[in-house]
Length: 156
Image (spheres, rainbow, N blue to C red):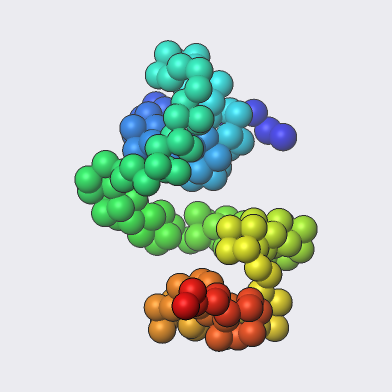
């Protein structure tokens, strides 16, 4: 893999993304470098200490929200990047690669199956997403409607 060159602009972007409590994986994806390159550069400049990733993960699991205005700033930045044809093509190539990666899709499916407590077969995904996203059923209720889960018994 080619060595990452850290210009002043990229360093400023790294620092900005770190201030938004993004993980190194997310920062690496946005900057087009490996998560380890972002992490090592942050350590080199003394911008972070050990345990940062664990801290961010625990904050997200506890439901701690990101700083105010985070979504708008990231959205604006993404819109500007999307207007650059070269950047757009890089992003689309990454999306195509991820979509073609069957192993990765299977891992994601397993992760959600563990969270829900049941698996949704690939041929039923569209119906399940409709019930959860559009009709606003809870995941377990959607599973019961589709016959994937036994209905919960009501105590008499």
